[in-house]
Amino acid sequence: MPLELDDLVASVKSATKEHARRGELKPGVAPYIRYKVSADFAYGENGVVANGGMTGIPFQKLDWTYAGSIVTREILQTPEFTAAAKALAGIAASPELIDTFLSNFVLRLATKFAGDEISDDHLTDETDRFVDSISPGPKQCGAKVELLGLILRKEQVELPGVLIRQTRREDLEKEMLNFPQTLEPVGVPYPSAIADIKLIGSIQELHDTAVPKLVTMLRLFVVAGVKHRGYRAFCGPALSNGGTSRHPGDSSMPMISAPIRPEDEPRLKRFWEEVGRALPKHLYQIQPQKVDHLLVAYERYCAGLLRRDIFEERVANAVMGLEALFLEERQELTYRCRLRVARAMSYLCEDPKDVFHLLADAYEARNHFAHGDRLPKKKRIAMESKYKDPERIYRGVMSYLRKALVATILGGVQKHKLIQLIDDSLVDPGCGEGIAAFFAPAEDVV
Figure: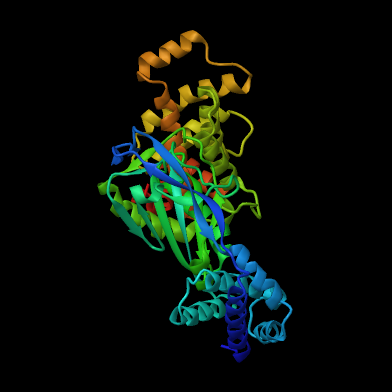
């Protein structure tokens, strides 16, 4: 640690004591709110249950930030600050930002000195953490992600780099600043699961890769509208010590939720290892670097999961996702798609006859929607009689699309090659070895 930083810390401590001796440092008050969940809180078969709701109790806390800012303004003009900034710029990962980082560090120290909230022992730790946080190299990063759409029937599941667990009372009973810009979503919908992510890297990797990849992987594991309603992130000792950053998400109720049961855990672990290695980055990038048939199919899948559309549009999205994976032609689309999907699903634990016939009804809904209409009443009644619940058509096509996406990700061949493999196996049963080998990696994880 540079000696210049030691001198700066000593000057901050001395200046704070002097201002305090002259009676120039007074605490202010900051508005806070403390949330409490009702006594009947429980985690059940469908996630969090808290029939009594949640209450927020406003209160105030002493706040020494303004007092710390008085000292900080003085310190920024001193030779000690200039010398420390120059010394740290030589070891910092981002020397152009060192003045900002050092100013924030001084403010944090001055605020704690003013409130008598830091001992000499903790002061050394605080300084070491600051130096580590600005130094080059990967840092210990993490995020606490509040998930919607995923229900755990087991208390927790540990996967590489992430622990997914049931929501606890302490996850909801928060104390926070009572300002509109700092408040988190509270209450319904309660997060149905919590994901604790840890990685060695950068805060940018956390935002750009870890969190969106987590959501994408969970959507591909089970047909559910998995999303996050927000997460708190930290990276490096200084940030974890000084506070975490809040990143909002989507706090609307998901249309489809699904459980992960204890018996699913072995399959989930295999899925996480195998699909996690093969998952293309452009499926979870905020701004994809390329658009291909796989991304189009995944986007249709997400639209079917997340958008609160009418039945026909949701089915149409799922069918269009399958078409993106299994069609290249412009003619006989319905028959070709049904035949190819049925053949593909026969390798993924589905009855090909059931798939073929269900897709016929799915295409009825898709074609009516494509022509700006809904299913005729007679057709809907017929579907209700046949399936008891027409939503089975939607869920079935979405399940086929999910399995097809996972198989395509793991199979690693171009679209026209997959279509050729399927068509050859339909014409000549002796050609089935190639198509079986393509779907084999997905068979145990879908």
